[in-house]
Image (cartoon, rainbow, N blue to C red; front, side):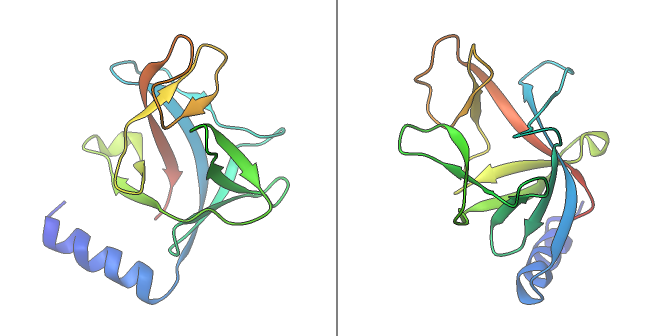
Length: 130
């Protein structure tokens, strides 16, 4: 996609406070395999152009805790953005406060810090219409 068009689309998202429905996955970089990001029985989420992502199952919001781990909170966490993947079949890469590099831990936790056992570089994918 032309970078100018992407900038205009991002501007429109923020201007009109667009909400988008989709599923979240985590994928180890270099691997085609994707794992659901599910807190409960569904991986359906609502992305808001204010930079928050809300679980449709329980209404909680995705946040990164002080220890770097992804969790759900009753209060919104801001700073999430959707970036069109270079491979359009993979949906949108999620970035958080400017970084799209995450870590998938041995126990399947997702972290923004490379501080968990068995951490592997990973991407978070939003599969929906933004």
